[in-house]
Image (cartoon, rainbow, N blue to C red; front, side, top):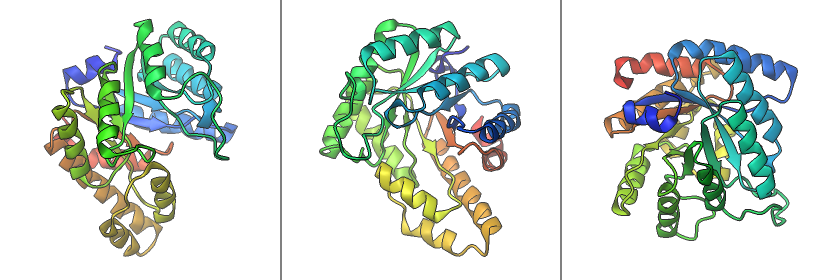
Length: 285
C-alpha cells in the first residue's frame, strides 16, 4: 500500500515533513533523522520544495534516496510558481520512473521582491489539473485553517479549497495552535459537499522568535496563551519540554475531534517528533 489515499482509507496515519538539505552536513543530519524516526512506522514522509522551485533537484534527489534506501513512502512537494508545463511534465516523468506515487500540489511562495512570478501557472489548481491528468499519483493539496493570507475572504478561500479537493485525494493543513480552527475548516468544507480527508499539520514550538516569523508568512495566529507558556520557560531545555507538551495536547485534541492522521513538521530533527509519539501512546492507533 503506497498511495496515501489508500493509507488514509485504511486508518489514521502518522507522517513527517522534511526539507531538502543544502550541505553535506545537513544531508547527514537528515539521514540520521530518518533512521531515528523510521522505527515509529510513519505512513509517509513529505519533502518540501523551495520558493520558485529553487529546490526542485534537491527535492527529487531526497525523494529518490528515500525510495532507494528506506522502506518509508515519500511524498514529493511540487509548486506551480516558476514552472512551465514542460518543467512539470518532466518532473512527473522522473517521479514515475523512480516509483513515486504521491504528490503534494502547491501554489508556492511568490518572489520576495514582489515581481510577477515566472512560469505557466497562476494557481495551485492549474498545477493540480496537470498532475491529476496523468492518473499516476495520489494527490494532496494544502489547506489553511485560518485562511490563506492571500485569500480575498474566508468564503472565497473555502470555495477555492473545495474546488481543489474535488480533484485531489486529501489535504494537509498549514500549522495552527487551536483545534477549533481545524474543526471549523472541516465543517465549512462539509457544508460545501467535501468529505475528503483533511490531515492537520502540527508544528511543535520551542522557539518563539522562529515560530513568530514562520507564522507571519503563513497567516497563522500565535495565541497569547502559547506566548505566555513558552515565556515562562527557565531555559532552552524547559522550552523544549513545554513545546512537546503543548504539541502533544493539540494532537490529542485533534484525534478526539476525528482527524484522520497527524502530520508533524520536524525541521529535520527527530527528538521532538519521537517524544510526541511516545506521549500519544495508543491514542494514535
